[in-house]
Image 1 (tube, rainbow over the protein chains, first blue to last red):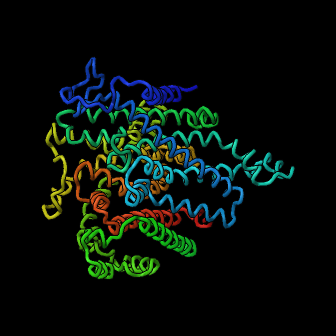
Image 2: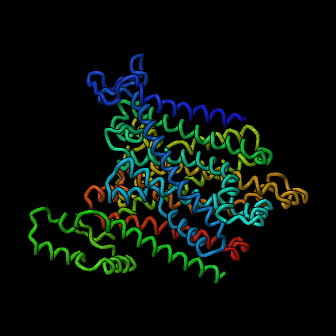
Image 3: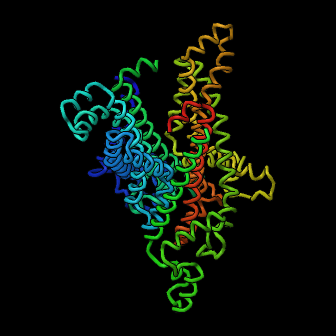
Length: 271
Length: 315
């Protein structure tokens, strides 16, 4: 175990716990406005203060964690569910027309930054958390396809795969039974990184109004609401920002730590 | 080299064609007839028909697609549904903000990342390296629009060194324009600089382990001379690739940063167009951004092959 992994896992677990606990308990109801108690600084009652409508920020951060984690998690799921089979197929049929087609398709999707995909989807279907998930998810597909293909290609040259082929296994079975288990570590590490990128993307989309819509709380929207008040109530902007940074930092540290932990060869070469 | 370039050029053209079809089809799915939206609910059928003809909406889909692409090739992006002005003019006006902003940010990012990455690689494993790597770890975790808000809070509201937003226009002078773009450019540059510094560091560390670096030291160069003459120069190849790729991310990223600083760039144009359902503007701006990404990637590929002949055989 290394320090990065422990620190990262702790930070990530903290926000995951906040999101889960928010389903059953928050200090206050995050939707209830209490205008007389608006714009309070953090104190014993409102641990992180209140916003311009008197809503409890601590509760909003907890529920916002739910939105961020859900959007990013589903987006990574979409990317993996479509990208990994595509990558495995491309590697199994390496050099074929289909391989070329999949890889060129990947390049094409890469040309659409997730923000641009979100703009397109929003222009047509309107803004919302589901559309944000789709936009970030589409962007994740080529990431996983590429990394799976790259890792699978070198595996296909190895002796144990050769043995499986001699034993008469089909390319599809080899991909599922021998290639996939051997790229899982890589996918977990990449998944952690994409998860953190997804949280940043969700925050950005919600900030410009293309993500979660009211009344769904979201860290990005809290920041958008805080913008005009930043001079008189800086804590409104500071707190959701710190929540994003700590979550992303935790996931990135966990990803780095996992990579070192799962691949001992890297420990030597990085030192 | 020529063969390789032609091959890449062909794949560039195919990518652009497919991207344009995808964008066109997605926008086609959008509900509502633009002409009806422009005229409102009380429109007479014959005015509606004539406007549809004027906008080129009365022809089959494939013909509209060809007109759209054919127009863009000649610099004609169509006419905005809401402003009734040529989309090309609107985009050109907004690019005067977005393009300089992206280039400014790219310059800043490079100026920060190069020294940081080289310094970290030279002190690999020691305190200085740890500090730089910690800072980059933080840099990639900070959302740039939040960082932008903090910059406004500190430098515009508290210290009053900069305005909190808006853009005076280049006719007020180069200095006034650059001054207005400084905070946005810093906000945009920070996460990119963190990524670039990491790439610079790891590229340089790879190079430092090469045999020719030992040779350079053996022939009597000091550690510093060897680092600069043989190390940094060789590490530049992967770093330049990343810089090329970052340009397109900066252009897209400026869309969000423009919202923080109320800058009249492409980003604000796109969001106004979305809320006004001015889909032809959305369509053209998205195509332009995708065009920029694909073209920059193409140029990076070509530049890479020019520098490193081994890549030419590998397509």
